[in-house]
Image 1 (tube, one colour):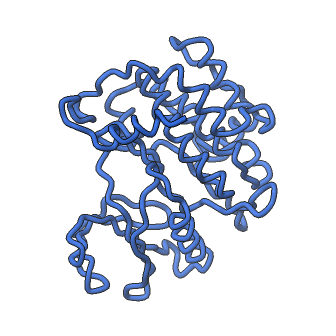
Image 2: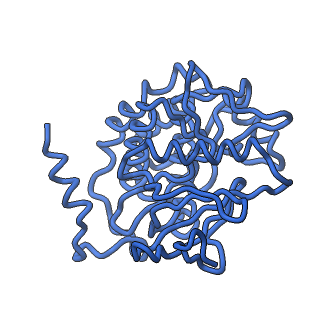
Length: 296
Protein backbone atom coordinates (compact mmCIF):
# COMPACT_ATOMS: atom_id res chain seq x y z
CA UNK A 1 0.00 0.00 0.00
CA UNK A 2 1.23 3.48 -0.87
CA UNK A 3 -0.15 6.54 0.91
CA UNK A 4 0.25 10.14 -0.07
CA UNK A 5 1.88 9.04 -3.34
CA UNK A 6 5.01 8.74 -1.25
CA UNK A 7 5.05 6.25 1.63
CA UNK A 8 5.17 2.58 0.69
CA UNK A 9 4.07 0.46 3.67
CA UNK A 10 4.99 -3.07 4.69
CA UNK A 11 2.17 -5.61 4.59
CA UNK A 12 2.11 -6.38 8.32
CA UNK A 13 2.20 -3.91 11.24
CA UNK A 14 5.19 -3.68 13.53
CA UNK A 15 2.84 -3.34 16.47
CA UNK A 16 -0.59 -2.23 17.60
CA UNK A 17 -1.76 -0.27 20.61
CA UNK A 18 -4.96 1.11 21.98
CA UNK A 19 -4.90 4.07 19.62
CA UNK A 20 -3.05 3.01 16.52
CA UNK A 21 -1.17 0.51 14.41
CA UNK A 22 2.44 1.17 13.36
CA UNK A 23 3.85 0.00 10.03
CA UNK A 24 7.36 0.03 8.70
CA UNK A 25 7.64 1.77 5.36
CA UNK A 26 9.78 3.51 2.78
CA UNK A 27 9.67 7.16 1.84
CA UNK A 28 10.04 7.06 -1.94
CA UNK A 29 10.69 10.78 -2.21
CA UNK A 30 13.57 10.96 0.27
CA UNK A 31 14.64 7.29 -0.02
CA UNK A 32 14.60 6.48 3.67
CA UNK A 33 12.96 4.03 6.03
CA UNK A 34 10.07 5.41 8.10
CA UNK A 35 7.47 4.29 10.62
CA UNK A 36 3.84 5.14 9.84
CA UNK A 37 1.27 5.18 12.61
CA UNK A 38 -2.40 4.99 11.67
CA UNK A 39 -5.16 6.01 14.02
CA UNK A 40 -7.63 3.19 14.47
CA UNK A 41 -11.08 3.21 16.02
CA UNK A 42 -11.70 -0.12 17.83
CA UNK A 43 -15.34 0.71 18.53
CA UNK A 44 -16.23 3.02 15.67
CA UNK A 45 -15.35 6.64 15.00
CA UNK A 46 -14.23 8.42 18.16
CA UNK A 47 -13.65 12.18 18.14
CA UNK A 48 -11.72 12.05 21.43
CA UNK A 49 -9.25 9.52 19.97
CA UNK A 50 -8.90 11.75 16.93
CA UNK A 51 -8.11 14.78 19.09
CA UNK A 52 -5.60 12.76 21.09
CA UNK A 53 -3.86 11.53 17.92
CA UNK A 54 -3.56 15.09 16.61
CA UNK A 55 -2.32 16.24 20.02
CA UNK A 56 0.35 13.52 19.99
CA UNK A 57 1.60 14.77 16.61
CA UNK A 58 1.77 18.35 17.85
CA UNK A 59 3.63 17.28 20.99
CA UNK A 60 6.20 15.31 18.98
CA UNK A 61 6.65 18.31 16.71
CA UNK A 62 7.46 20.48 19.74
CA UNK A 63 9.64 17.98 21.59
CA UNK A 64 13.07 18.20 20.00
CA UNK A 65 15.32 15.72 21.82
CA UNK A 66 17.58 12.85 20.65
CA UNK A 67 15.67 10.52 22.97
CA UNK A 68 12.29 11.16 21.32
CA UNK A 69 11.30 10.03 17.81
CA UNK A 70 11.24 12.69 15.09
CA UNK A 71 7.89 13.43 13.44
CA UNK A 72 8.35 13.81 9.68
CA UNK A 73 4.81 14.20 8.37
CA UNK A 74 1.13 14.12 9.28
CA UNK A 75 -1.92 13.70 7.11
CA UNK A 76 -5.05 11.79 6.12
CA UNK A 77 -5.36 8.75 3.89
CA UNK A 78 -8.71 7.17 3.06
CA UNK A 79 -10.27 9.21 5.89
CA UNK A 80 -7.71 7.83 8.38
CA UNK A 81 -5.22 10.06 10.17
CA UNK A 82 -1.58 9.03 10.04
CA UNK A 83 1.79 10.12 11.39
CA UNK A 84 5.10 9.51 9.65
CA UNK A 85 7.96 9.16 12.10
CA UNK A 86 11.60 8.27 12.33
CA UNK A 87 12.10 4.51 12.09
CA UNK A 88 13.92 3.33 15.21
CA UNK A 89 15.97 0.15 15.27
CA UNK A 90 16.10 -1.51 18.65
CA UNK A 91 14.32 -3.59 21.26
CA UNK A 92 11.79 -2.45 23.83
CA UNK A 93 12.73 -2.66 27.48
CA UNK A 94 9.81 -5.08 27.89
CA UNK A 95 11.38 -7.47 25.37
CA UNK A 96 14.84 -6.90 26.82
CA UNK A 97 13.70 -7.93 30.32
CA UNK A 98 11.65 -10.81 28.92
CA UNK A 99 14.70 -12.25 27.14
CA UNK A 100 17.48 -11.21 29.52
CA UNK A 101 15.73 -11.36 32.90
CA UNK A 102 16.69 -8.81 35.58
CA UNK A 103 19.08 -6.25 34.13
CA UNK A 104 22.45 -5.39 35.63
CA UNK A 105 22.22 -2.36 37.93
CA UNK A 106 24.34 -0.15 35.62
CA UNK A 107 22.05 -0.79 32.65
CA UNK A 108 18.82 -0.31 34.59
CA UNK A 109 20.18 2.99 35.92
CA UNK A 110 21.44 4.08 32.49
CA UNK A 111 18.11 3.36 30.79
CA UNK A 112 16.18 5.18 33.51
CA UNK A 113 18.61 8.12 33.41
CA UNK A 114 18.20 8.51 29.65
CA UNK A 115 14.42 8.46 30.11
CA UNK A 116 14.90 11.22 32.70
CA UNK A 117 16.70 13.35 30.12
CA UNK A 118 13.71 13.08 27.77
CA UNK A 119 11.26 13.75 30.59
CA UNK A 120 13.25 16.83 31.61
CA UNK A 121 12.84 18.21 28.08
CA UNK A 122 9.15 17.28 27.99
CA UNK A 123 8.35 18.68 31.43
CA UNK A 124 10.10 21.95 30.54
CA UNK A 125 7.46 22.27 27.80
CA UNK A 126 4.73 21.36 30.34
CA UNK A 127 4.27 17.99 28.60
CA UNK A 128 3.52 14.95 30.76
CA UNK A 129 3.92 11.56 29.10
CA UNK A 130 1.34 9.77 31.32
CA UNK A 131 1.99 6.28 29.91
CA UNK A 132 5.62 5.52 30.59
CA UNK A 133 6.16 1.74 30.63
CA UNK A 134 8.65 -0.87 29.36
CA UNK A 135 6.99 -1.17 25.95
CA UNK A 136 7.39 2.59 25.47
CA UNK A 137 11.14 2.60 26.11
CA UNK A 138 13.37 1.32 23.30
CA UNK A 139 17.03 0.40 23.64
CA UNK A 140 18.88 1.04 20.39
CA UNK A 141 21.95 -0.94 19.24
CA UNK A 142 24.30 1.92 20.22
CA UNK A 143 22.98 1.90 23.82
CA UNK A 144 20.80 4.99 23.46
CA UNK A 145 17.19 4.97 24.66
CA UNK A 146 14.13 6.38 22.91
CA UNK A 147 10.91 7.29 24.75
CA UNK A 148 7.99 6.29 22.52
CA UNK A 149 4.23 6.75 22.29
CA UNK A 150 3.12 10.15 23.50
CA UNK A 151 -0.47 9.20 22.67
CA UNK A 152 -1.71 9.92 26.21
CA UNK A 153 0.55 12.93 26.74
CA UNK A 154 -1.00 16.28 27.50
CA UNK A 155 0.27 19.81 27.68
CA UNK A 156 -0.41 20.86 31.25
CA UNK A 157 -2.24 24.17 31.48
CA UNK A 158 -2.72 23.94 35.23
CA UNK A 159 -1.32 22.06 38.21
CA UNK A 160 -2.86 18.82 36.98
CA UNK A 161 -4.07 17.51 33.64
CA UNK A 162 -7.42 15.75 33.65
CA UNK A 163 -7.45 12.62 31.54
CA UNK A 164 -10.44 10.51 32.44
CA UNK A 165 -13.26 9.58 30.13
CA UNK A 166 -16.70 8.46 31.20
CA UNK A 167 -16.29 5.08 32.90
CA UNK A 168 -12.63 4.82 31.91
CA UNK A 169 -9.24 5.67 33.39
CA UNK A 170 -6.66 6.19 30.65
CA UNK A 171 -3.27 4.62 31.15
CA UNK A 172 -1.67 1.28 31.99
CA UNK A 173 -2.61 0.10 35.51
CA UNK A 174 0.76 -1.47 36.34
CA UNK A 175 2.53 1.89 35.86
CA UNK A 176 -0.09 4.41 36.98
CA UNK A 177 0.48 6.66 39.97
CA UNK A 178 -2.02 6.75 42.84
CA UNK A 179 -3.07 10.31 41.96
CA UNK A 180 -3.89 9.24 38.40
CA UNK A 181 -6.04 6.42 39.69
CA UNK A 182 -7.75 8.29 42.51
CA UNK A 183 -8.21 11.75 41.04
CA UNK A 184 -7.60 11.40 37.30
CA UNK A 185 -4.81 13.98 37.58
CA UNK A 186 -1.28 13.64 36.24
CA UNK A 187 1.76 15.85 36.69
CA UNK A 188 5.52 15.50 36.17
CA UNK A 189 5.83 13.46 39.37
CA UNK A 190 3.32 10.98 37.97
CA UNK A 191 5.86 10.25 35.23
CA UNK A 192 8.51 9.74 37.92
CA UNK A 193 6.27 7.22 39.69
CA UNK A 194 5.84 5.31 36.43
CA UNK A 195 9.60 5.35 35.89
CA UNK A 196 9.99 3.96 39.41
CA UNK A 197 7.71 1.06 38.44
CA UNK A 198 9.80 0.47 35.32
CA UNK A 199 13.08 0.66 37.24
CA UNK A 200 11.78 -1.83 39.82
CA UNK A 201 10.76 -4.18 37.00
CA UNK A 202 14.10 -3.88 35.20
CA UNK A 203 15.92 -4.90 38.38
CA UNK A 204 13.61 -7.74 39.44
CA UNK A 205 12.52 -9.07 36.06
CA UNK A 206 8.81 -8.85 36.85
CA UNK A 207 6.13 -6.15 37.14
CA UNK A 208 5.85 -4.49 40.52
CA UNK A 209 2.09 -4.87 41.00
CA UNK A 210 -0.06 -7.49 39.29
CA UNK A 211 -3.56 -8.82 39.82
CA UNK A 212 -6.44 -10.71 38.20
CA UNK A 213 -8.19 -7.48 37.19
CA UNK A 214 -7.30 -3.87 36.47
CA UNK A 215 -9.07 -2.83 39.65
CA UNK A 216 -6.99 -5.24 41.72
CA UNK A 217 -3.86 -3.57 40.33
CA UNK A 218 -5.35 -0.11 40.94
CA UNK A 219 -5.96 -1.06 44.58
CA UNK A 220 -2.35 -2.17 45.04
CA UNK A 221 -1.00 1.00 43.42
CA UNK A 222 -3.01 3.11 45.86
CA UNK A 223 -2.65 1.08 49.06
CA UNK A 224 0.17 -1.46 48.94
CA UNK A 225 3.76 -0.61 49.83
CA UNK A 226 6.23 -1.83 47.20
CA UNK A 227 8.71 -4.53 48.20
CA UNK A 228 12.36 -3.59 48.32
CA UNK A 229 14.62 -4.61 45.45
CA UNK A 230 17.02 -7.41 46.44
CA UNK A 231 20.72 -7.42 45.61
CA UNK A 232 21.06 -3.75 44.67
CA UNK A 233 22.96 -0.95 46.45
CA UNK A 234 21.02 0.30 49.46
CA UNK A 235 21.01 3.87 48.14
CA UNK A 236 19.43 2.77 44.86
CA UNK A 237 16.79 0.79 46.74
CA UNK A 238 15.98 3.91 48.80
CA UNK A 239 15.75 5.99 45.62
CA UNK A 240 13.27 3.54 44.08
CA UNK A 241 11.23 3.63 47.28
CA UNK A 242 11.12 7.44 47.01
CA UNK A 243 9.94 7.24 43.41
CA UNK A 244 7.15 4.91 44.51
CA UNK A 245 5.88 7.09 47.33
CA UNK A 246 2.09 7.31 47.26
CA UNK A 247 2.12 11.10 47.74
CA UNK A 248 3.71 13.05 44.86
CA UNK A 249 5.36 15.58 47.19
CA UNK A 250 7.45 12.78 48.73
CA UNK A 251 9.03 11.78 45.42
CA UNK A 252 12.23 13.35 44.00
CA UNK A 253 11.83 16.99 43.04
CA UNK A 254 11.97 16.51 39.26
CA UNK A 255 13.40 14.41 36.45
CA UNK A 256 16.67 16.35 36.42
CA UNK A 257 17.21 15.61 40.12
CA UNK A 258 16.46 11.95 39.51
CA UNK A 259 18.95 11.91 36.63
CA UNK A 260 21.72 13.19 38.92
CA UNK A 261 20.90 10.57 41.56
CA UNK A 262 20.95 7.75 39.01
CA UNK A 263 24.30 8.72 37.48
CA UNK A 264 26.51 7.09 40.16
CA UNK A 265 24.94 3.71 39.39
CA UNK A 266 25.23 3.97 35.60
CA UNK A 267 28.93 3.14 35.40
CA UNK A 268 30.97 0.26 33.94
CA UNK A 269 28.06 -0.92 31.81
CA UNK A 270 28.58 -4.53 30.74
CA UNK A 271 27.91 -5.71 27.21
CA UNK A 272 24.46 -7.03 26.39
CA UNK A 273 25.25 -9.57 23.64
CA UNK A 274 22.55 -9.80 21.02
CA UNK A 275 21.12 -6.40 21.86
CA UNK A 276 23.97 -3.96 21.27
CA UNK A 277 26.54 -3.40 18.56
CA UNK A 278 30.03 -4.62 19.34
CA UNK A 279 32.26 -1.97 20.97
CA UNK A 280 34.39 -2.16 17.81
CA UNK A 281 31.54 -0.62 15.78
CA UNK A 282 31.88 3.20 15.85
CA UNK A 283 28.89 5.02 17.35
CA UNK A 284 28.53 8.56 15.96
CA UNK A 285 25.88 9.26 18.57
CA UNK A 286 28.15 8.37 21.49
CA UNK A 287 31.04 10.27 19.92
CA UNK A 288 28.89 13.38 19.72
CA UNK A 289 27.50 12.92 23.24
CA UNK A 290 30.96 12.59 24.79
CA UNK A 291 31.98 15.98 23.44
CA UNK A 292 28.71 17.61 24.49
CA UNK A 293 29.29 16.12 27.95
CA UNK A 294 32.53 18.08 28.26
CA UNK A 295 30.74 21.40 27.88
CA UNK A 296 30.30 23.03 31.28
